[in-house]
Length: 94
Ligand SMILES: [Zn+2]
Image 1 (cartoon, rainbow, N blue to C red):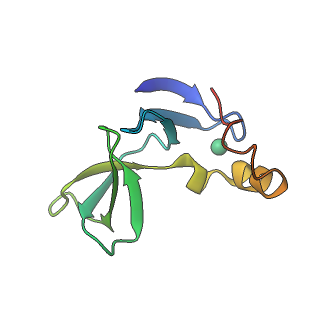
Image 2: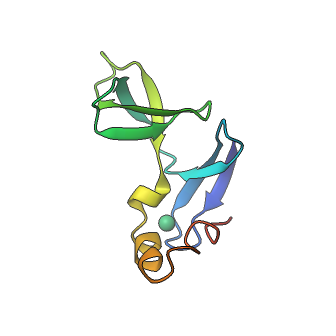
């Protein structure tokens, strides 16, 4: 897991998490507490690089912490992706 990286599009800090597949996913660095479960509306990446689905929860009933993909929150990436759909992911570099 790399720290100190910034999104080249919006300049926000991002956290690179190595996925189980071997690819690195840029995520927002703030951990999100969630309760794991099918049907949840959150798609998160755990510190171990596992993609999980769940619902936002309070610390009292959460099953873990995950990170939101920065692709979901970066406005500039979304704008760029509309113009260049194939280049959006590969250009997301540190
Ligand atoms: Zn961004």
